[in-house]
Image (cartoon, rainbow over all chains, first blue to last red; front, top):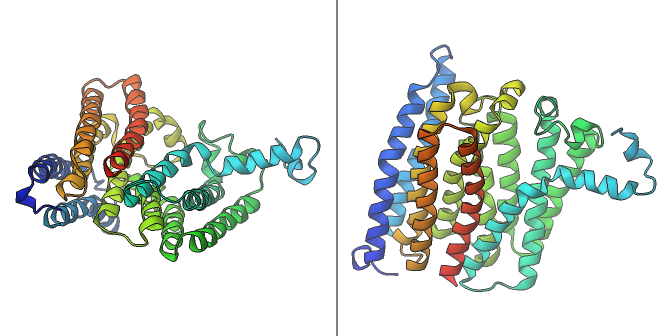
Amino acid sequence: MHALFDSPLRVIALCVAVLCIVPASVMSMRQMLNLRSNDASAGIRALEALWSVIPVVGLLGLLIWAGLA
Amino acid sequence: MSSGVIGAPSRGGVSTIAGEYLKLTKPRVISLLLFTTLAAMFTAQHGVPNGWLIVWTMLGGYLAAGGANAINHYVDRDIDGHMKRTDARPVVAGSVTPRRALVFGLGCGICAAVILALAANELTAVLAVTGLAVYVGIYTLWLKRSTVHNIVIGGAAGAFPPLVGWAAVAGHLGLYAWLLFAVVFYWTPPHFWALALLLQKDYAAAGVPMLPVVHGEDATRRQIFLWTLVMTGVTLLPCAAGLAGWTYLVGALILNSVFVVMAYRLMRTPTQSMARITFHYSLIYLALIFVAMAVDAI
């Protein structure tokens, strides 16, 4: 396996992945957080927020793991 | 169909009963999951895996996923009758009793664990059973009826099959295996929300809080587009990690470009036919992206 900056393939793929993932995941998360019902209890709202955030945290972890591999 | 079919099999009765139990496993849904398992095996092997290992892993994978689906029929029997898509399922129709569906599902799960542990390894068995547990416990029993995020978080269950395939060949899980998991995980929301746009009346009637039912079609179409972009990025990570080559990158870029254009058109042209096209393409897309990975690895 080539080091990240020795491989054009790795650099190109990582750049495109970051450009796709970061803005889209933040926009998706923000929309879902804004859509939460104000009538719901604090516990349910917190849980809904957690479900919105978990996939984004996972994405950040994958990006870092892939970049450092 | 009456439950008497079960008690008194006559000419053709045995095959009818077998057919009803086969329906409990949702074979059409499982076929795509098993395809991801198979492709993961080829990718992990960097070639053609042992034939018998393929056979036993496919059988174990089918039984684990089929068992999860049978238990899902048992748990959801109260709402399946309210949906056109599910009102003919064996438990709702009465051709299999709820108790027998549950026992059948649990039995399939146990058989899957035994087969995979003996024919592959313990890790493979644990992953298959964990996938079953996530589908039944996290998705069906907890999230499906309680949150619009049901298929996002619960979608993790459908991402276990490639892990099963990888573990069967490699005996351990590395970055590439988890990237395969992520591809299916982040593919699931645009796939299921496109379906939910088509079936939202059914879901509303059954009281299932799918995204279009709770927050409307516009929000759903926007989420489909955004998640398609996210999924596109995720499918490029095997190349970013140096685990896949140009062959896969070119294939992934072509497949993703089509998906992104479809999701964009769905967002701008809110028609049922566009939702249907997007849903059907998503099925082909997942199969082909895994083919691209396997071909690149071989």
